[in-house]
Image (cartoon, rainbow, N blue to C red; front, side, top):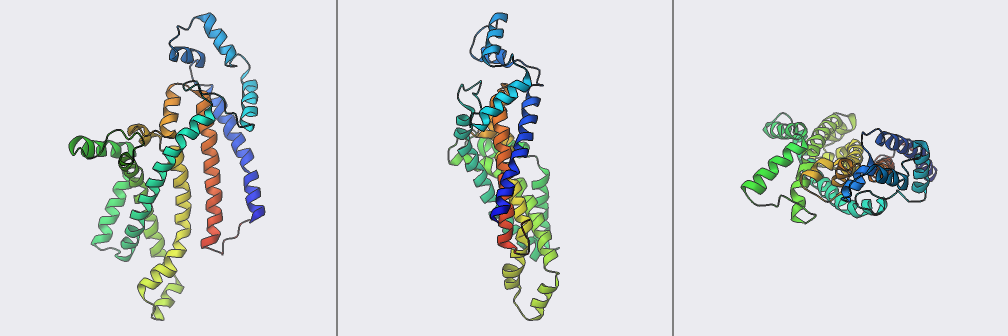
Length: 309
């Protein structure tokens, strides 16, 4: 296990290096001038002389490969550069926004598990009955409905019509309800379908039929034999979902003005804040790879037949 973890951590190096190269060079293909954007944000009229001086101060007059090497050298030492908009180190900006995203992702994941687990079990137990049909219709809506559309509907009904919840979250406890429900809705649909299919496949296996033949109760078979075995694919989905929530909740965070990294990176894209965009992508790549590593390790805790190689 120790050798496997060390090898996987070493594999992070080429992955992050590839991500950094793509991110850095693609960001410079955007048709805009960061120096001009910076001066506009500062309220300074961008004359040609001032633009050239600002580009030189920002290191933009050097060849792009040299800029990349300088930037990469800073990243290795923990310096991701300085945000154009915030005028603070990128590391500090991201770490100041990350807690809000972690809170939102945690709430969405908790809501997903609390809803998907019982619904998936009920759907499989009552296969082809009314409860099963209703749950499958619900999960189909969850998968089909875009998150931004659901978010707007929730704002209309619960904020504009019923006036129960605030339209702007701003990190407050009550404000987490609508964005968490929006993020969880589509995930619940996916998890219910996956769980239902996995349980139905498992209960037709020989060891389950043998347990029925020995008189073991249906509930004991379901909760002590079937569910532990179907958790392996669910864990895979959980790992991917955590990475997706931490890196891809930008639209939902923007709709609900949730002060997380998703809203931050959308704002950075509009402002051509290249250092912040590059730092965000590196952080998200790191989170994705580490999440997958943790998922692989958890595999062995639920299924000892899986060997880490």
